[in-house]
Length: 301
Image 1 (cartoon, rainbow, N blue to C red):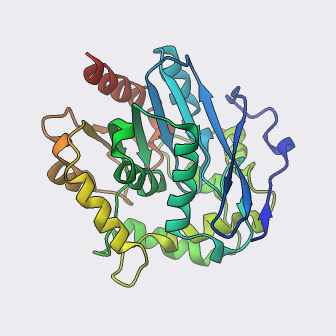
Image 2 (cartoon, rainbow, N blue to C red):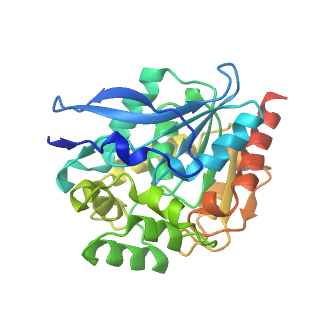
């Protein structure tokens, strides 16, 4: 597997990004070694929070959430998925599969031996993050699900259908513009540039290109059996799960209902609808902090 690495200089002096990079090495089944970047901020003995980003963003999406949670005394861990952010990027689209991503992130999670986690997951951060919960339920104290799902081939929203068509046909994938368009507020030019920073040219975007096509929305997609097995675990998951979908996301509209209906830990929880677009982290970071911190406070009371 050929792997690309974004030059560190691309990440210098980013707006609102004071966090020191940390790296872990993971090894693919074919023997390829890759560097995975993550943020790890806050007191070592603070309640640990795992923030999982999706497509085509990176941990920068959580910059204000990280600061807010650290101010509450929480330890915050925010990785970049392989293919995104400061993590290494396989050069071929065929190198990216759902199961490979789950395996890569599983290796990272168990390598750090993280336990007692509260997960916040959005977009592909949910598709992968919820698979981590299903694989290692004992490591998670609670979950907040936002603008995501765990599909099993039963169809897609019109919003996702439009995104899929766009992502697979646009000649140059305008990552920063996509994130800006997926938020209700207008990002500054500096913020848009920070989302473009991981991708010096189109050759670095093969993961971003491939991710929409990997979402298992038809019976013909891969990973449906694995997701069905994961749902069996989630349907027995009794630790608290809160939904915090936003009110202006056509991609994931209505997706909270399945979690509220099927996950035992969702019963009686203070589910919320937040104000924001698909990338709600850009629209209401303070509200996200309060949802996460409130869940931790209830589970540790």
